[in-house]
Amino acid sequence: MIKLYDENSDLNLIIKTAGNSCNINCKYCFEKIKNVANYQINPQDLKNILNSIKKKCSIVFHGGEPLIIGKKNFCNLLNVIREYFPKKVNIVRIQTNGTLIDNEWLDIIYNKYKDLNIEIAISLDGNEYMNQLRVDYNGINTFKKVRTSYRLLEKWGKSAGMLSVISKKSLNYYNEYINFISSIPNIKFVKINALFNIENNKLTKDSITPIEYANFIENIAIIYIKTKLYKKLAIEPLLSILQRINNIESRYCNYSCRKCFNFICIYPDGKIGPCDCLSINEFELTNLNNLSKSIFLEDTIIKTISSTKYNTLNEIISKCNNCDIQNFCNGGCLSQRYYFKNNKNLYENYCLSKHKLFECFSKLFINKKEYTNND
Image 1 (cartoon, rainbow, N blue to C red):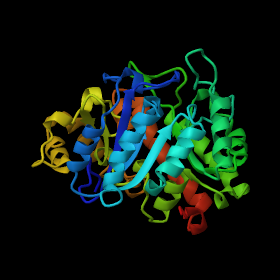
Image 2: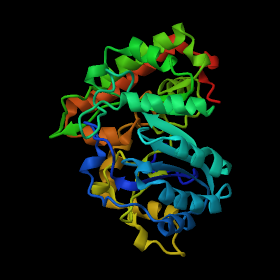
Image 3: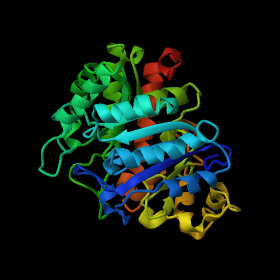
């Protein structure tokens, strides 16, 4: 059964280190429209949120750009994490745009705080052409700076994940995308997201439809098999699609029972909300100031999501009850479906895209468990 919050699972904390402050100016950034303060989270607030959690959690430092607060301030946050690692915090990640990484940052991450086993993922939409919406405030493509960061990581003997957003400009570049990620020896994993931005209940000009995204993923999968790239790295959502077809649990929320309220965002102004794909403007759960030693965050989540404020999300979930592929996609991304809700064509297109992926991958990969290894 799909639920907004799986109370039997641990939380993933998304620490919005500097709110939506960022040193670059991506054309599709949805963080910019959020009503949040642009100052950094302080160590005591981080400590308070960790004290409010019952069980273990993972941490990802996120943004905006998390490294924008500077090395000294970031170390202050890592000092807090160190107090809770590994008994309460079991995984530490940084999601960065990659443009600020230098030797000093890598010395902090891999030497000074080596004991935290910090993982890095970098946002890059593919080759230089595909990355043209990720620009700085002078309109210059960030591709070269980010590629330099991967090379620097390689010199350190380190790998990093890659998160890519596929826009209308990138749809026909699946061969180029595979060639590009294959050319970087130290990519740890790849996650391919779709640009589904909505304005006035319509897709923005650079956004793509769910079916277009499904077509892109299908083409990527065909090349993934042909080139045997699966022997080198895992690509999401390919991995999760294959896992679900073979009745293996997925870690990726789009195909998992762990949904929006198992991924909790903490903003510097004290706002606490679900996964950052749902705007904090609409879905604020509580505030740091409201937390107390006698009330756990998990209990606050359970109490809050039962309010009428979340009826629409629960209604979206209920529409999956009679679907023949519910166990495959587990409702997909609830935030995407939420923002499609007032556009019938897009809403239906989203579900059709999941059926398309199910049918396509069932034919391509059925019972091919060698592709589902996510070690």
